[in-house]
Length: 88
Image (tube, rainbow, N blue to C red; front, side, top):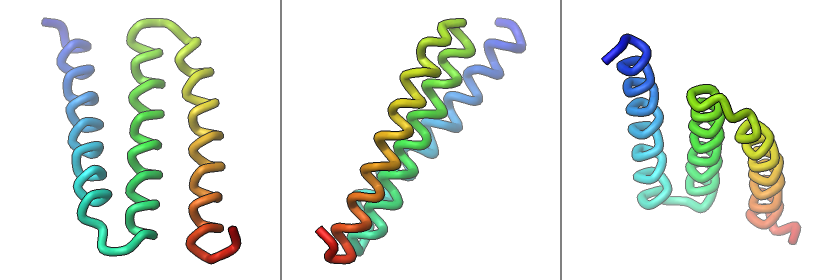
């Protein structure tokens, strides 16, 4: 294996570990706001993984997909925040 293969493996392992920790916080979170923050973190990690996969495979359409996912995730977090404040 080349250095680049090891590097890709380490990066994806770090993203996967952070994703796992985010899932633990999402499941365990004592309040709804903790769960929303954990869900936003998981969403950000998914976006990072998509952008990194776009770089690895040279398919930059994944970057466009991740940008749309980021905008939808941001709107979702705003909706959850309004709901938690009692605005909806």
